[in-house]
Image 1: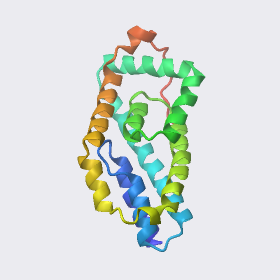
Image 2 (image 1 turned 120 degrees about the vertical axis):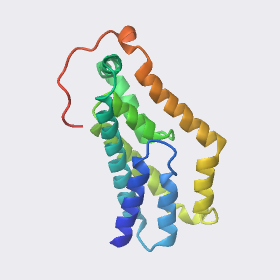
Image 3 (image 1 turned 135 degrees about the horizontal axis):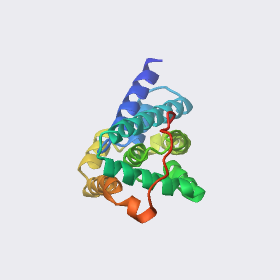
Image 4 (image 1 turned 60 degrees about the vertical axis):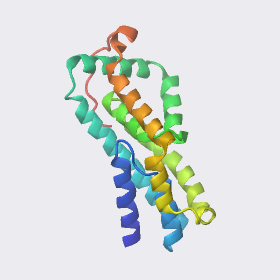
Length: 196
């Protein structure tokens, strides 16, 4: 039970990071190689911890959105309203969360900032992580020679990895700066979402 709690805590903490976190799959592989835990348990606990961390990260950015200028709030409301008008956008976004190799931290930050419902994205993310973590946990022996330290070092020092994180952060800043209200028109007033 202690090993599951440690796994949950580590994966949860990594998924609270808004950028430059080590890849969660490497922790899944590490636990697959260094413990006697069944792969199914590692995958379930890892996916639950990752989804919980991202859910909380999005809520943190939602709280942050209350402290931005009114102009930025109006822009984000217009972006949210345009997103919600087209159901196809929601389905595509859920697929992106479930299957994308793109860093998800900034995607969750954008969902939180724009005050889009968080729970559907979290559930799609959880489902996607069940699949990807199953693959990683199942192939742990194949990557045994590749050390966790190498993985962290490459993730944190790779020019491509750093570049992708910087681009994603830039896109998050752009989300708040683009005059969505001019592009899509003002959002209709609506009640604040209390759920996620």
